[in-house]
Amino acid sequence: MMRPIPFLATVSVALMAIYGVVSLFQMNPTVKSVHFDQTAEPQSIDNGDLPQSSNINTKGHTQNLEANMLQDKAFQRSVQSIAASYAKQSRFPASSMPIPDREALQKYIPNKSFGASLPYEGPNGQPWRFGLKTNKFRYFHGEQIEIFVQLQGDSQQVNANVSVSVLANREVIHEAGKGVLSNGQFITQIDTGKVDTKNWPSEIQVMAIAEMNGETMQVVETIRYDVSIADVKSVGEGTVENEYLVIPVSIDTEKTGYFRITGVLFGAESDKPLISLEGKSKVQGNNNTILLKAHRDALLVGGEEGPYVLKHLWVEKMPGPPDFSAAFGQSHESSYPISKHSFDEYSAASYEDPSAERSLEFLNKVSGEVHD
Image (cartoon, rainbow, N blue to C red; front, top):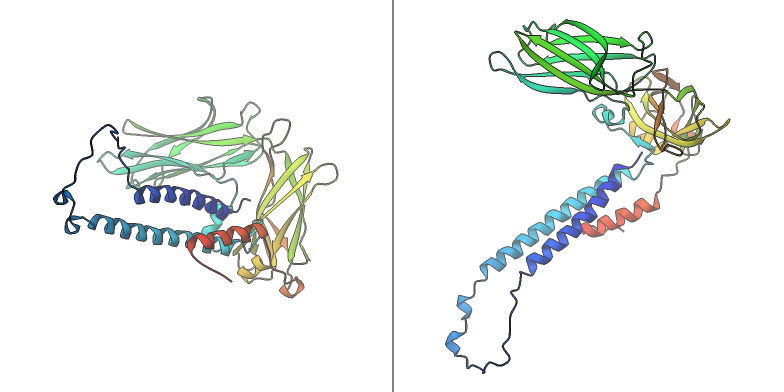
């Protein structure tokens, strides 16, 4: 997983470059070109033609100076904020990042559907929003595709007929369900294990149509229907190795190459999301185990020694030859138990990243902050 803050550091460098150019132009107004006529006769200058000091307008220059000072302070505060966030996150490996709260969990859940919706006008001019959402974005053969259709607004008393279908290349390849909106909602499912899907392409669309009083509302969401190239075979309960809780994940696959596995560690009793985990390894032959490593410092943020539960496991074969395309696998279990270990069992060594320290030092210099 790419650490998000270094990207912000890169952006800050670009902003500084732009800021420097803008400041340069503000401090050095455009100078009109001057042509000297070397053949002209020298002219005498009357002192009355010289500008008097009382007539020189310094107000505009003072205002520009004050504006530049304010701009400098605002820029420094912005970089200081970036540096503070970077310092906080760089304490942990990017592959073992604490999750501050349940709201932040959403960005670590893989394979999410974002749904689709469109605005419509009701019969009395009231604003409606007609949408649909599947429970995932990518599906494999045998999985259930759950489809939620919703009409938002003053729609509780609406009597609308709804139909849901699957499209490929703008043609209907499967009728998913028909019914009537109930309290503005309609739910249907597709069991891909019982449906003939052998001719389904990888990219398909789910379309919902609602008809009411001769008016038609329509919305479409794109999803993926892929072949799974790997299955999670087993997950170890975890052992302490130095400052890490090491969790081995074994996969069953016929593919070779670099694989990436992500997951989220929860407290078994609190059900609190604690750490986002990521592991990468080359898989070939009998070497089919990828390690997820939770750092002690990251575990300390949540304050729970275990037991834990590993959820949201996701398997990805990273792009490589010959086709340089990503492929995906699946976990058939929703969670895996991870054993409890006292924090005293771990090494107390803190995580260190020399490149992150250099980046932080640079940001602090730019922002005017000095740390010994």
